[in-house]
Each structure stands twice: as structure tokens, then as C-alpha cells.
Amino acid sequence: MDFSKIEKEALIKIKSVEDLNELDNIRLFYLGKKGIISQEMKKLATFPVEERKEVGKSLNSIKNLINNKIEQQKISIQKIFLNKKISEEKIDLSLPGRNYESGKIHPITKTLEEVINIFSSMGFVVAEGPDIETDFNNFTALNIPPDHPAREMQDTFYITDDKNNEKLVLRTHTSPVQIRTMLEKKPPLKIIVPGRTYRCDSDTTHSPMFHQVEGLLIDQTSTMANLKGCLIDFLKEFFEINNLQYRFRPSYFPFTEPSAEMDVAYKKIENILKVGEGKDWLEILGCGMVNPRVLDNCGINSKKFQGFAFGMGIERISMLKYGITDLRSFFDTDLRWIKHYGFDPLNISSGSGI
Image 1 (cartoon, rainbow, N blue to C red):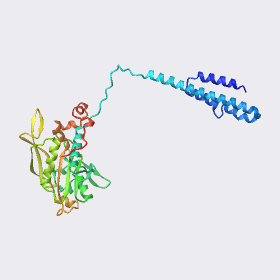
Image 2 (image 1 turned 180 degrees about the vertical axis):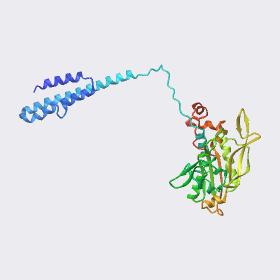
Image 3 (image 1 turned 90 degrees about the vertical axis):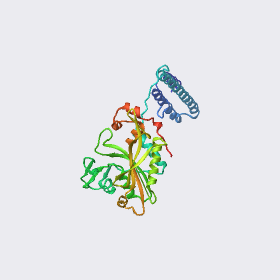
């Protein structure tokens, strides 16, 4: 075979190709296992010894030459392709930049983070539970009698569990999580329970779905004084007011005894409430010492253990802190509202201490 002819044809093909796939096909045609050079190599055994040496030398020379030319052409094609791509994708530095809008943290999320951080610094642990609860956990275990108004259909969302023939409710407070915790764990207990709650109510200050955070502490020594100190420190830290004006009023809740409501002073400036000072009072949370009947219902010895509980609405304290006037706006889909009242993602505090 005329090896010089093979070499000449291969070099012409390699030089003229402009596509990497075609170049690879040429490589296989000449240098592949079934390529021309490989096939000629297999025929060497049929040549006389002296001639075999010269033919083998020529084939190796052609093989190396073709391989080198293919690599050179490959680099050349890649360079041409890269330059073309760069020219097509070049950036016009005179063009104005693109504005990318970042999302906002919702005031409820921000408030929940703040509340959790403050109580966590006091040693409270977050506890969670299901939104759909049993009548026992939501009412009975909390010493709420069968004829209590809170059990009425106009106040509570009831769900019928036909499979188990059991009355279920959308929890009206996060207190059922306290019941679950007391049933599952032994004192001492120190938890806060943030979460969604549901009631049949809707106006500028009420929503059928809203958020609460409740706290529970069970041990052998806690008193009303400990409860008051805990809540006073919390509100001072949350509203960032050291000289916060507050008061505790006697109240009634079936699950606490004695019970109280905590008020903070406020004044109205241009239809916005300013918390912490003023001549008027605003109820902000309910609290009290855990009723011994609740402890007994959960299998805790009420003669040995005692404790306190409290609860507040997240939307309420968020409205007061950030000057939001309508509760319903929390759940609107108006981007203008979230842009105004929302918070930058990096503005969420990672911790808090008192």
C-alpha cells in the first residue's frame, strides 16, 4: 500500500475539517481499532523480517503525525468556537444594571422569631403540636366545662371523625400542646408553644385563623411573683422599653387560678398606638397559676407540683410594635403592604438576651 498517499489524504482531511465531531470521525477512520493504520499494523506479521521493520517504522511515523495534526486541529477548532462565543456573548458595560428585588420577611414571622429568641434566653423550650385536636385536649383537660361558651359552634370549628366516631376541633388556642407535653413528660417543664389557632370570628381586630404563643412552667417552687417577673422582662425586651408602664388585673380563666390579665399603658398618636406610656391601658396577654385540676387531669400530682402559664396573640403584639392598624392586612396578598411592613432577610435577629 502507498503509505505516503494515506498520509497526504489524512492531512488534507484534518486541515479542512471545522467540526469536532467530524474530526473525531477522521481519527477513528485512520487510528481506531478498525482504522486504516490499525489494519495495516495487523498485516505486519505477513511481511519478511527485514521488510517488517521498515514498514512498521513508516506506519508508526504516519500514526504519530496524524495524531499530532488531529490534536493541533482540535485546539484550533476549540479556539475558533470560544472566540465566536465570546463575541456573541460580550457584555455592553454601558447598559444599565438589572434590579433584582429581594423578598421580605413577614411581620408575623419576624415577631415569632423575636418572641422565641427572648423566651429561649430565659430557658424555655419550643414545643409543637397538631392544628386538629381532640375535644379532651382542647377543652376538657383544661377544665373548660361542657356548657362553656367557647365550646359553642359559633365560636369553634368542629370536625367530625366518622372513622373513629370522635369529635375533633381546629384548636382554639395552643394550650392543647401544653396538655400533650404534661401527659407525655414529667416535671419540671418549661415550654413555649407558638402556632396557628382558629376561631369563628372576623373583623378589623379578629381573624378566623391567627397565631398565638403560650408558655408553661411546672416545678415545685414557682409563684405568681416568678410569673410577673418573667412577663415584665419579656415585654420590656420585646418593645425595647426599659421604663414600660404596666399593670396586672385579676381575671378568670378555667385553666388558671388565680388568673390575671396584663395591661400596658399607651397613647394614640395620629391614629397609631404608642405602647409603654400614656394614660390609657391596653390588655396584652392573659396569665395565671396553673389550676390544680389541669395538673390532675394530666396525671401530675398537684399537691407536689405547681406552675404558671401565659398566652398572647402574635398579631396583636406585632400590630402594637410595628404600627399596623388592621389585622386583616396580615393575610392580604398586597405586595405594597409587605414591602412597607416587611423586613429584609438579614434583619432577623439570631438571638436575644435580657
